[in-house]
Length: 407
Image (cartoon, rainbow, N blue to C red; front, side):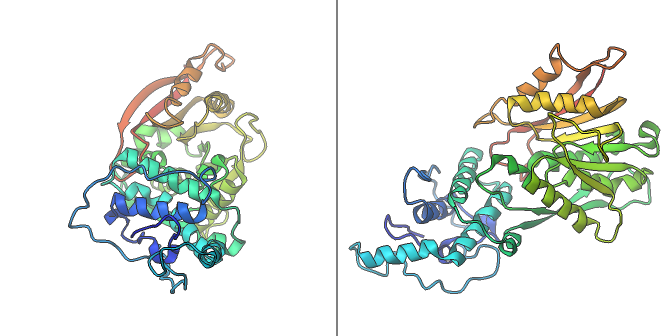
């Protein structure tokens, strides 16, 4: 696909297929993003980026894919491509380009493609991580440039359904071989960085897999937790971990456990509740409760009106103050004998580089909360985990798993 300076191509006829995302080359992705940038971000300051992929020779075994966003095959857009007219730039061409930019169908198609690309970028294992990270940022920049918001029905069409399957090990029979969870990854707004919980990130996937591989390692036994434990997820996002636990616990003789998934962002909570309903459509009440929680102002209202025997959180710290809020919130809810499992994504580049250090500093600070008998909430164990191929964003280099308790 070639993109001229003055004649961007319609998204429906230029975007490569997401159905075979793992076959796309860097050049194909770069060209697609440059075209969308030229079309929807004509002013350099509004959405300025150039292709930052390093030029590489395309493997002969990888063929170009047809223009298909991974959704329904589009009809002919009716817009002229960059090689259908003469070389001179005319007012008619400006009118055609403006019409293309204003075309709601084309914009919706582009939004679907960008949202799907961001959500599934982890499948691009053959592209270097730094290049993939920049591609994701570029896609988010174009997405953020859209000022129009889709209607309620259109918004539903922009979601991505993801099915997760975690192999179950070290669990007494009878038990299924795998724990299945279906997640609705809603589109990011592109304008609000706090809505990242609308999509499932690598840390929650890795953590869910670790728990299913060895539940006892995380204290998920009746001997440790009792018959009716309370488990709270902080910053639940799409709810992947809570939904996994709700499916797993009955096979561990913990069917009476209370699982509460919390978050702060309204759109994230709405999507979280949708995921709970879709995973347990026939169960009333659902085995996962949801509620709003502000870490800076922990609530004691139901369902958070009793201490938690187990706290879990995955990749929830994105600013220095978050670590302190998270520590204080965990101290508010955790029982004296409880455990807080926190997995954090290590990023060595970008704006979140080194942010994980704030977690360790927060739990080592002299002002850490204490129990009545003088115990302090501390990190008692840290395990470094390697990044898994095909899981997570390009800026993720690995993970740290923290075991936190009162000492």
